[in-house]
Every structure is written in C-alpha cells, then in structure tokens.
Length: 301
Image 1 (tube, rainbow, N blue to C red):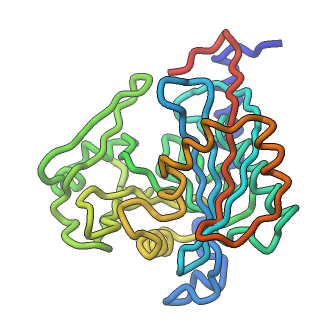
Image 2 (image 1 turned 135 degrees about the vertical axis):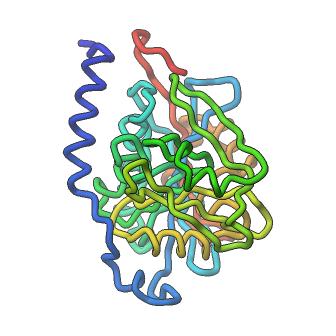
C-alpha cells in the first residue's frame, strides 16, 4: 500500500520531533575536552551524490580517515533505497544506506569504526532542528557534525541584521521546493582561516556557525551539532580536518575519480569488493552505490 505524500510527511514530522528530544548538544567524549583532541584516532564522513543527469541512481559514501594524518581505506557495496525526496526530510531517504555501511563496518572491522562522523549537510541548523547529521547521530549514538556548503534559510537567519552586517561582496541563492537557501560568497568578519560567527535565528537561538575553514577559500562552510558534541568543539574539529574548504572526510567522497568508480560498479563487482579484506592504503573509504527505487506516485526534484 502506497502512503500518500501528505500523510508520509506528517509521519516524518512526528518522528523528527521524537528523535530531536534525544539529541545531545554537549561534549560526551574525553578526546573532545582535550585541547589537541588527544585520543581521537578515526574520523568519518558521509554523503550521497547523484550521477549527473540521473536522479534515480546515486552514490552514498562513507569515508573513515585516521586523525590527524588523514589517511584512508576503501570498500564498495550496492544497496537499494525506497524513500522519496521531500525537502527537510533527507534523513529518511539518505540515512538507511549510510547506516547499513556503518553497521557493516562495525561488524566486519570494528577497530575501524569512526569516533566522530562528519555529515555533508545540516544538524541542528534545520527547520525542525533535526537535519541528517542529527538523524544519523541519534540512531548510531555516535558524535556527529553537520557541515553544509550552502546556507539554509532557517527562521530568518539570512534576513537578520546581525547576519546581513557580516555579508561581504555577494551572495548566491538557489530555490528548492519553494524554500530559499543561499551560500554567502564573501563575509567581512571571516578574515582568516578559523574565523567564525554564530548563525542565530530571529529569536536569538544559535543553531550553528559559519566557518572560514581554509585560507585557500573565502567561502565559509556552515557547521552545526549533529549529536554528542558541542558547537564550539564541532567548529574547532571541522577546522582541524580542513586542508581545503571542505573537511577531508567529506572532500574525499566528492572526488570525481571515486564517483566514477561508483558509476561503473555493477552488483557483481560490488559483491566481490564487499567481501575483500580492508587493506591500509592512502585512503580508508567505504563507497556505497545506491539504486534509488522510488514509487511512481512521487516526484523527485
């Protein structure tokens, strides 16, 4: 039985509210309290990217890197996803294959499980304060950090005088399902790598921070708490993991060569790869190629 989209959205809203109560916005690990993150050895990153010109087939990536040296390993697996795209509910579509990849890693190579996970998307900086980073963090009970490349338009953040006063040369905007989001191209207060400023809603609540993550780029990233980490620690950790604008656990996933590997994978290749022993190479990566099976009643946008 196909659930009408309106009913599905209401179900998802109730589930987000329920899971939001489980989000922890404070540091819970000993390494988080250390000035140099002593004790942190493995950092992970997850992302789902579509093949150009194809909104059905996609690659969901899980990358695990050693910290602070940023070395990685590789594996690949085919999975199937059945949820539609609905703005604001990416966790219900993208989380399942990423959770499967992490559970498989935990089962087969528990010594490689990340101690913290970077998510290419938002955490608390979300319409209902429960983005993909929160969704994954709560279900995994793992420290998670949301790192978005575009500024989501949440509760007047873009319109607030405080935020506008920090906007520099120009802004770029995109529209998705009638919801406006923008990526601030240059921000006056972010003069050097490591500079940040809070993203406060119209009510004054801080849901994240804009961070200039690298001296190589004037474009900030937008960091927010996913689970079991404080905002200040999330920002500091994100900065230490950036060689360029995007943190390495996420940037490695966006590498075009690895996306081509996903595109060229077949179920038979994936089965062979999924059974191999993880070998320490320059990179530790789990690449999950996802076949998006969406009911014809839903429209992908």
